[in-house]
Every structure is written in structure tokens, then in C-alpha cells.
Length: 112
Image (cartoon, rainbow, N blue to C red):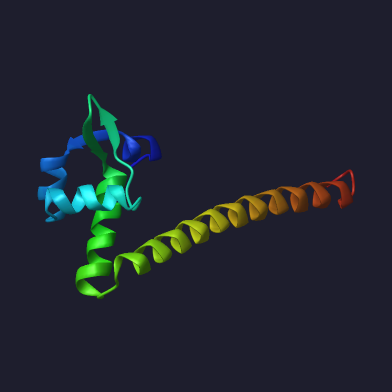
């Protein structure tokens, strides 16, 4: 799924609640705590596929692993930082590979 379609808001709170098996009040609490940021349309919360995935991750951390909400906030923040660093590392690796190829082309004899 493309990043744009993952962030496209498509689910109202009742559907998000059903998909995640979390009570709508729980979703509202998570928003107040800043754990999720659903879009607003005419004062209604609209959830994207990425929001649903994040809610499922929060549910797994709290219900299956026993992490409290303060711990969830820290874990999610660290996971976002790791993902960003991984993207930066992948970018640097790509640039390095391009530069290595350019150096090899420059070092190779003209006839090869």
C-alpha cells in the first residue's frame, strides 16, 4: 500500500472502533493523550489506515504486553525515530553506492 493511501482518512470512529476492537471512548482518550492524530471533517474524527495500524499497535502493547500508556508513548516515539534513522541510512547507502559507481567509472581505463 502506498504511503499516500495509508494516510488517507477513510474510517469514522465507529468503524475504527470495530476494526481495532477498542471502545470509541478509548480512541478519544488516545487522541487527547496525543497517541493518535485522526483528521477532522465537520468536527468528526476520520481515521486513516495508518491510524488503524497505530491503534492496533497500541492495543497490542497495552493489552498483550501490559505496557501502560506512558510507556506506549515512549515506545512509539522511539519506533518513529528508528524508522526515520533507517530511512536516512538507506538514503546515505544509496548515495554512497552511486558515488562508488562513479569512482569506478572514472578509475577504469577508457577502452573498457
